[in-house]
Amino acid sequence: MNLFPLTDWLRLLYPQGCAACGAPGGEALCAECRAQVEVRPAEGCCAICGKTLIDRDAALGTASSVCRHCREERPAFDLARSAALLRGPMRKLVHGLKYRRETWLAPVLGEWMHGCFLAHYAAERPDAVVPIPLHPFKRLRRGFNQAELLARDLSRRLGVPCEPRLLSRVRDTATQTKKDRDARRRNMAGAFAVPRAREPYAFGRRILLVDDVMTTGATFAAAASALRAAGAVRILCLSAARD
Ligand SMILES: [Zn+2]
Ligand SMILES: [Zn+2]
Image (cartoon, rainbow, N blue to C red; front, side, top):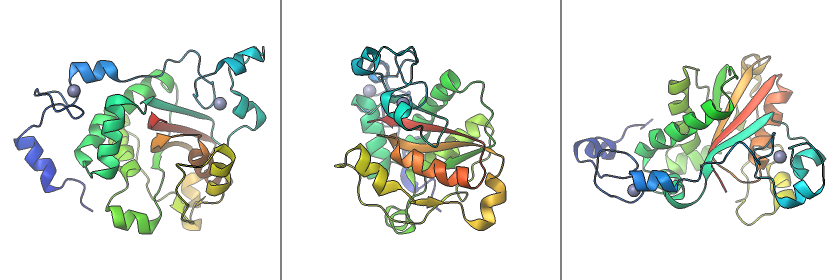
């Protein structure tokens, strides 16, 4: 476990300024970059998955604020929300954490995610914060799981325990980036499980699932169905960004 490597200490000694643009200053994200982060408003979003409702959904004339996908098939999770869109400074932060091992960015993203939790989930009382696990080989290769770093940061902010071993990835999945919605769902089905010894920790509990990026929600839905099968009663999903 190397959650606070040497580079992080160096950064404390020699602050680099804004995490997204490098502008000097004491803030993790400068005022200009902060203003560019596209936070999703509560209005005009699907009440279940948080996706922006497009005109086609509105044109159906239903009074419901639930998107077409969630109406056709309700996802295994109860609710999903994202702190911001995966654009501009937010894309830089997420990619820095995931691909450039800039683990010091986790609390910067965690702050935005905490804000999103307070805006959308203030009435919720999760029992555990659970990161979307990486396959063990991928975890080994990357050296850390970015979702786990975010979950640990949120867990501290919320005062709710982080339980990274509640879910395990039982199947490695092909990369999702070029897949459409149905292909993503097929790709993720059965990818997660709650280990038998951990089932009592899922039964009857309210879980906050955490990931760095949400695209169609297929990953969250697959993880949520494993938790449901183990008896979890409420499953909220929260990602730093939405693609
Ligand atoms: Zn900046
Ligand atoms: Zn939806």
